[in-house]
Image (cartoon, rainbow, N blue to C red; front, side, top):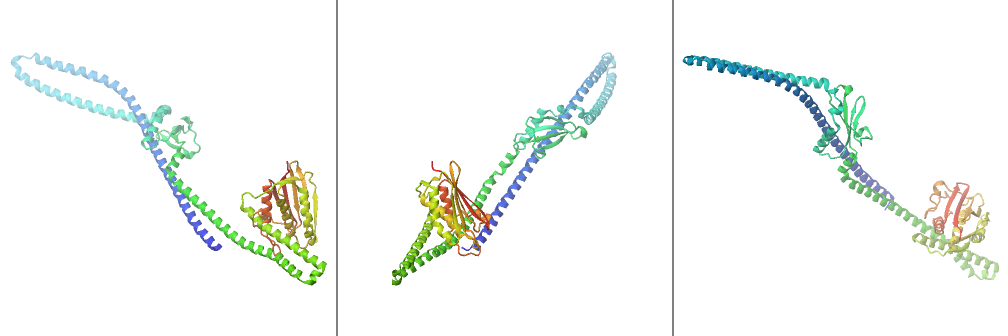
Length: 503
């Protein structure tokens, strides 16, 4: 698959997934906002009802007070009226009893007439009494209203809105509206501050407080506010929208899998390109020594060459050198298998680091001198005994020296320096330094990655597989040590290896 095709698929899938994720987030935000709005509406409705009930209690208090006073006054008036009616009825009875029987009919007629008149008078008096009572009750109600308007605010707010009653009303109203969350509340005076509050009332911010003015007809300077908070409000809101969380989680999981898949696709594409470069480099590296050996073998078939000891020695030397070179390249290819194993086959032994390094330097000295350079050895470690695999340790030092020559500057002879010291009683430090082309800072972070090769600009004579430093890093890690690099462009590089001593 072409890289452009991968990029197109990546962009399309990324837009689709991000769009889906954005829609889910927007929907979640709207759901949370709606639940918050519903929550606020329920709480404010409950607070309004609590305020109305407290106002009704206030009205009932003053009505009971004034009616008690009115009842005392009305009871005295009723007793006086009862005495007057009794005396009037007694007078009528006496008059009827003392009349002469002979005059009974005219007297009865007159008596009935007077009785009707008395009944009419009594009815009118009762009508007047009821009318007076109505007017009195009306004036009483007006008086109560005026008292509430003028004197209700004089009562202490703790009496007008008792904390136990407020708590009961709040709980009842909230439960009636379907809200059973625990709450905390406080009554706050506009001028003097908190009048009373529950033990857990401590709002984190003003947004967490729901407020309503109690007895709004009170003077503004004496007005009190009922504040309510819900400590578990966030949990309540989240519980109502938590069904959306799995869908968001699956979307994020899908996005993560997609990104991982795309990264693998790009890695596979890169590995495919590296494989092709690897095959091309390997072919070139093998082709040169094989051609040299083939030419030398043909020369051996020439009688004149066989008769000349010097020419025979030269041809034999070429065959020997190219065979070593070919064997070294084969070993590099075989090192590739180490990266595909969890544990490389190691044969750890007690080795003298100074002796092994000195042996590698002697072998490599001719190659450095071929380019007019020198290699200096300052093997000053007093305790050089380490626990390593000899072959792999030798390859590590050889790879570092080979890179130093490979990435040399063309205008300056290569100068290499190998040192060993004991930074402490438990470790040995091996340093390989050169005066080559150096590396950029971004290259230093990647040089120990497999197949990574530092760019050499317009130079095309630097061949390799990009495995040398990755192999070095892996071996040092298996030896229980560490390696780091320091470099500056145009001034050279330095590789510092730290290994534990053999105990």
